[in-house]
Length: 166
Image (tube, rainbow, N blue to C red; front, top):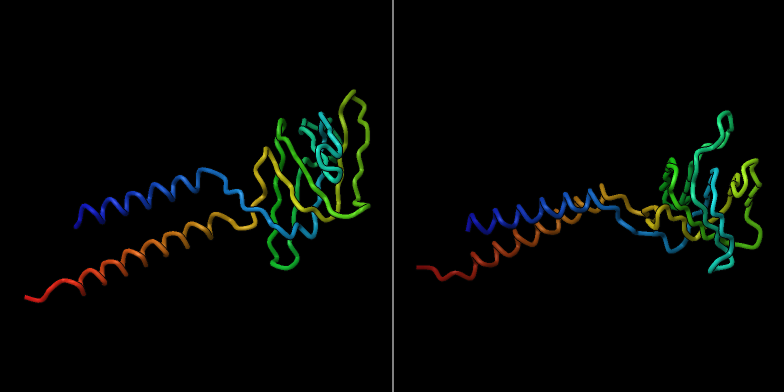
């Protein structure tokens, strides 16, 4: 019996470590009420394959510029918000809502480089194909552990009730 409990605890610890080391990819289906992107990028692709999208690769902004290479998202209903500082080489994809978002794409001094500024709603924002999460892993892991422990407790209690009395 102790070996089974030890095995179950080991598996739970392994799952916790695996969940914390890999990004979760929950994404909001309703979209983000406010998205702000300030970035310096290259490889800009607008409207492909979906007309209301744009993507680019982040590069180091010129020295002395006010470009922050950040993405900020906010869900006004839940209050969830995230700010992510972009690193050179990150690939950002934004899918936006509506006819006229506040997208500003300016050609930079270097060829094929752009100053990208976005302010508006979005159905999704991904960085390196990982969606910015709606639920943080810090909430998911304790809920998973609690559910597992409840299942073990229930199974143990049920098993002890079914044993014949001598």
